[in-house]
Image 1 (cartoon, rainbow, N blue to C red):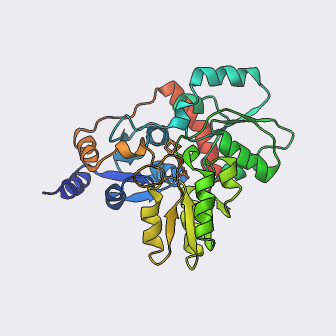
Image 2 (cartoon, rainbow, N blue to C red):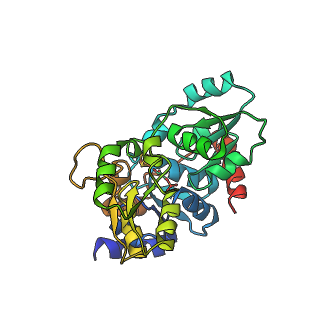
Length: 308
Ligand code: 13P
Ligand code: SF4
């Protein structure tokens, strides 16, 4: 049997669902029951009837699934699948920060640990961050963490000043403005689209800014155009499937690398082999202590209620 056949057999026997993020390798996206952005994945995790959730993504995503579905077994193909943004916000330091600003509403981007979510009033993802920030009364000061780039983007759209945590994503900070503008000069008809984790100077030259799912939808709605895509390169696989006749070019990274684009090393530690093994052995399992889970669930549920 091929690895794919073995995974298919096992997932039926075990009543497992495979959830994958758009940044996963193509073969993982192909075998998944659902491929989506952070919001879509957490909505799937909250509503699935499966007994096992195989989370082909990174740790904070699987942890969010476990918080939403504590009675289910949640496995991640490789525990090393972390996130630079989540790592940039250790819970202890964040607690000191929030304690120093007690009157603030604390909004955290879903790319953070369960411990940080437990210190939060409301969670957001890149697809609903504007809506979540706008749901907070105007006279209420806001702490926004951990992504300063997303925070700055929201301020530019809403005029809402917020106290920003100094975190960022290594992948989205790797884009080169100079190379991007050079590329655009060569292809002036191409539309630049960007993920809001990108730096301000990249966002400023983009015609559309949105989550991974938002970017795919935008391209689908304008499939007669061509695009330069500033986010992790894994998205191009699903995007191209959706618009087979549309030209897509990944935005260039600062450092020369083999694909001249940006890849998330954390996302890419997951492989088909590891996916099979984690389903077979039901390990590594994601666990969240009851105390943290109960506190972290509240701001996640608030977000989901506002995202229907
Ligand atoms: P999305 O929610 O847009 O898929 O973003 C997740 C992420 O980690 C982007 O780097
Ligand atoms: Fe984290 Fe950036 Fe990778 Fe997304 S692309 S998982 S924010 S390191």
